[in-house]
Length: 454
Image 1 (cartoon, rainbow, N blue to C red):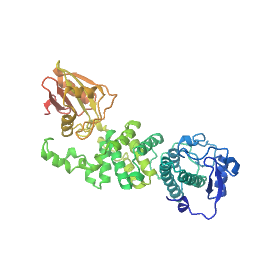
Image 2 (tube, helix red, strand yellow):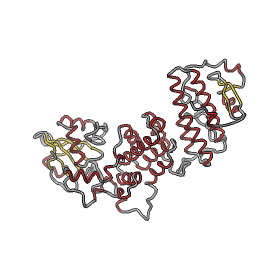
Image 3 (cartoon, rainbow, N blue to C red):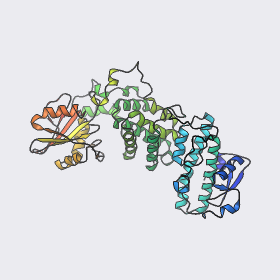
Image 4 (tube, rainbow, N blue to C red):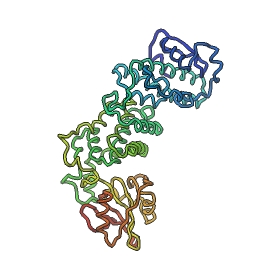
């Protein structure tokens, strides 16, 4: 086990009794020791420790059960700038708002990383009922918190909402940042559990998914082109004159393998998608705020360069370079949006369909519908559940549970197709005919009639 004394080398130490454990805590300076005594967590008198609860079965130092929620924040009138008693997520949020010198920031980041690792070790020690190890870890945590407090006393947090964090990049929305960070921790998407490379790969996938989920497809391509170091992937592959017309052909599949669509960053797992969808949902599908939250987690885990790359995709646009295409919502650009309507044509000819958010192009929907929509009951379930984020043949359907169905009549199929485009911004419609039990589809930009899908 790494000891804090190896991390912070000091010659002279000062001690006080921890009121929670009854053990002696070692501080790097008299001021640190006195601050802990004044805060009430330690005593410089041995008798005080006997009045506190016995050691063993102690709560996690970062949990509210540990007694740190009472003084959760300091008032604006407190000029100390200290943050001794924030829980771990609040501590990191507080640090992100502070403009610290690079040397101080480096030391604080190192201590925060150490606190995170000790939190993990403390949990293991408590599970194993190893009181001696837990006491030692708690002592290390006490010292680290004092060290952080001392480092920050000269840097008062800003009162106003920041536009940039200490890395000079956008700070994002603190509430969304915190939610995404907690979700990543809950799912085990951390460098401590996965290693730095795998952690960064998954968070990059989450950033791309957050953009596509928010319908920022051009920005998603731009990010992938930066991550893959392939500038040519920044352009829309659907505009490639060499693109095969038959989306169900082998030639189309081969062409697709050489485009941005082949990138590994388009293929996150359920956990990375969950992080992305939380970011996009809580931001109201605002792409910039979504990826700022993901970049925040990366910065808090020391991946500052990757965070800067991700945030850079929104840094380069300005009034002199904005094109007409940039001013048109992505959902209505030809070949750009991927929204669709999926539904049924009843035996009476009436149509009812549900919204599917992305990847609605035929080459994806055909295998997805074959996999999941084998009868009218499957389609009716989709409609009842309020639509879905997407329908893929290699993953389960993630339903919206809140969308409203769209209605029409097969006797006026042209009006239904036009309404799917104008009212729902759908690029394609897919309808299961309950009479012949076949699937039909239409491209809302150019078709006025249905065509057989399979």
